Amino acid sequence: MRNGAPRPRLAPAVYRVATPPSPSSLSRLAPSNSLPFLKSASPLPPPPPPPPPLAHRPAKMEAPLKLKPCAFLLLCACAAALLRALPASASFSPVDNYLVNCGSAADAAVYNRAFLGDSSGSGSPRVLASSRTISLHDGSPALGTPQIYRTARAFARPSKYVFEVRERGTHMVRLHFHRFNSSRMEMCDARFHVLVDGYVVLSNFSGESESRPVIKEYLIWVDAEKLVLTFVPAERSKFGFVNAIEVISAPKDLILETAQLIDGGKIVNFDGLNRQALEVLYRVTVGGPKVTPFNDSLWRTWVPDDAFLKSTYGSERISFGGRIKYQTGGASREVGPDNMYNSARVIKSTNATVPNVNMTWVFPVTGDYKYLVRLHFCDIASISLELLYFNVYVDGFLVFENFDLSYVVNEVLAAPFYADFVVERDDSGILSVSIGPSNYSMAHAIDGILNGVEVMKLNNSMGSLDGEVCGGFILKSWPRGNMGVLVPLVAVICLLLSMSVVMHRRTTGVSHTVAWTRLPTDMTELSLKQAKQQFG
Image (tube, rainbow, N blue to C red):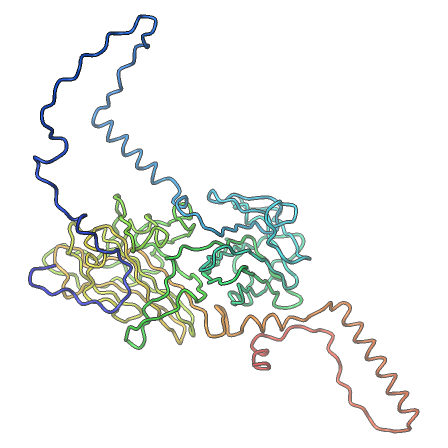
């Protein structure tokens, strides 16, 4: 903080910061004459005992290996590189951890994680709760295709997976889809809905792409003993499928109860965030390379920001080789991995003036939903504390003014921090995030920084993340019973009724016409929009 200047003003926000250190931890070093290695003189040690007889003497020991300073430093560097190469996911052990290889009796390994086959003979816990499903196999998989994308489970009727829940709270649900050529079914006929614990997460979904796998990720609050995934074909002639499923209990601090709602330029509390269903739309590492599940403790993927950055003018990439200093009460490694926080984009002053430039990222979104925007910060660029001040904008609104990152992380460099904002969009378009210098920014210093961005969609009032129809209506709109038996039965009933009417006319002599409406034999489902208008 510059001498005499007031503490920079911040827009209201909920800070995830560590508790202040105790006074004892801030005590200064003792004077040199009290250091433990400065001891007073002591008596000489007693003489060594006489050597044992020759027969009992130990073998001669080799002299210890002496390393030169340069070799020692090289060894340390190799050890540090080896530690960084170890999987970060080893530090988190979820209570509920279901990894399902759908449509297969064999297990498959992806990023050192074992996906268990869902077929009855696989020996894994039974999670497929529906019969009359279909196993699909890719007869000619592309070279390098992971094993979980070479099989799929297909559904020609509403079908369920049921997972026992041992720890209630937020659960991560990932659905893996990959369309491939199958001799049993045409993937072009796939169109279906997916419900997770009653929330509509996918509507009229077809798998999207035949060239690469598609992963849909959701954060669902579970307050029951079971979590149910339901796949419903959109029509009788269509089918649903899935290649792999992940259901994992999330850390308690991943989604907190309160965020900041941007409401007409004002910032107010948004309570109950953790009870919402969330779909992860974008997870971006700023200024750095892709972060794979191998290097994330929650097995997430963070993509580079190049596709979302509006302009590179005025920004600079930086990377950090030191240790990210996670603090109790602040951002944890499960909130954001080291490999995301150790890179960033910055606005840097290289002369006596502060650059008049903003860094802006844009994310396409659809209307009629609220969105959670999570921003990740970690000062890996400043040479000293209290040199970094900047402004933060979300969707064009100033949310942090004269943001002092040193202050919110208790005066520690390379300590991560994140902030959550909820934005409501009435129309489709783009959602923007901007970083720019503030009134307190300094020359010859860093004047803005961002390490990561996440954008998540919140469920609407219908309990849906994809459309305006609730899960209950989708289930009720599916035709019940066996159509192969129902259609002949209806025809027989109609014939009997017709014969009864003819006999009645002959016996009573009444002559009048009876208007009949032809019964439909093609009982296809109404479109969701028409059905809503009819039953809404």
